Length: 188
Image (tube, rainbow, N blue to C red; front, top):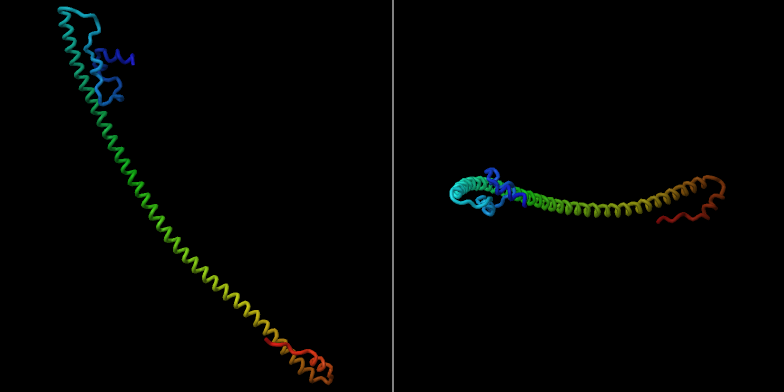
C-alpha cells in the first residue's frame, strides 16, 4: 500500500489516473489522495503565485484525469453490463435446455410406461395360451397313451383269435387245451 502513494502524488498525467484500472469500482478514490497537497516547504510572496499556478495546472490535469477515469469507469461499467446481460442470457438458455431435457425425459418415461404395459399384457396373453397349450398337450398325451394301450390290446386279441383259428385246423387238441387255460384279455 505504501508503494502506491508516491505514484498517486506524482505530477505525471499518466500516473494521475488509477494505476489499477481493472480494480476500479464505482467509487472515485482519486479525491482521497488529492495531488494538490504541497509536498515542499511553504513559500511566501511570488512563490505563492507560482504555487497557485502549479495548483491550477494540477487541477486541470486532475480534471482530465477524472475525465479519463470516468471514461475508464464507463468502459468497465459497459463491460460489466454486457457480461451481466450475457450471463443472464446464458442462464436463460441453460434453463430452457434443462426444461426441454426434463420434458424429453418425462415423455420418454411415459412412452416406456405405455410400452411396459403393452409388453405386460402380451406376456400375460402368451402365458395364458402357453398354459392352455400345455394342458391340451398333457390331455392329448394321456389320450394317446390310452389309445396305444387299447390298440396293443386289440392287436393281441386279433393274434390270439388267428392263433385259435389256425390251431383248430390242426388235428392235435393240445393247443385247444392251452387256449382254454389262457383267458382272453379284458378290453377297457
